Image 1 (cartoon, rainbow, N blue to C red):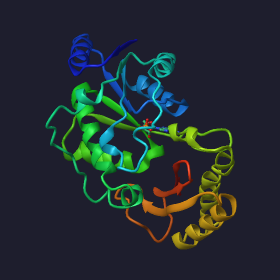
Image 2: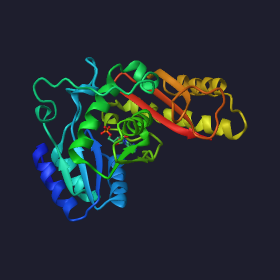
Image 3: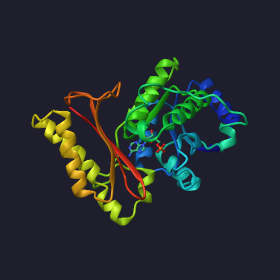
Length: 281
Ligand code: AMP
């Protein structure tokens, strides 16, 4: 496994692999890798012959008061994890390599980015869509894998790929969780012991939603109410940012939970913002 920092090096290596007839798989990340990321790399490997992982903490997707500066960075550890999961190449550019002086082109996916996390993180998805389109352009993969953990991001990338006619298969990967149900996230490391003890309540709220739906209580408002009750009770250190029940493509609110309905929530704890979701049928 090689680690490179320049666009030129990536292009050379990919050109050679393509000449050899290899299909290229791609997993974009911001590093601080965990088992969730590794599951994406393994899935990419199933769909391709040569897997590229990018590790880049993208400044344009962070708001001014967000954690860009303190976001965990540990390339050595990440490289060992990538290798263990079967990655073939790490692309780890610095900010100047990605955003050269005078950079002024941004990708804005409209509509889908308004609600959910877009509402409380203005500009976030503009930064995500911009960097992902650049990375897809640099790596030119046959397939790229994104986690369902960031369901809105996955929807945005699918829309962008379709709208811009990118010849790339976008693959969604299931959420990997800790034993107590907490969705794995690089930001979980910020949590205090007390917050960490409350954090699995997010998943319990999603499970409650699913069990309500299974028992025939499909009305979105009452599902949201019961989820909120659970969170107020079990996670008093956190503040609910949103609980939304939307269709999984247009991300528009629905009245009844049906097949392919996305139940998503975000909570602000003093030390970290956590998100989670489930598809409720
Ligand atoms: P990040 O490094 O947070 O930008 O995430 C990189 C990719 O890993 C994104 O496609 C995420 O959706 C995905 N990812 C993050 N956490 C998880 C998880 N717990 N399970 C599955 N995929 C994840």
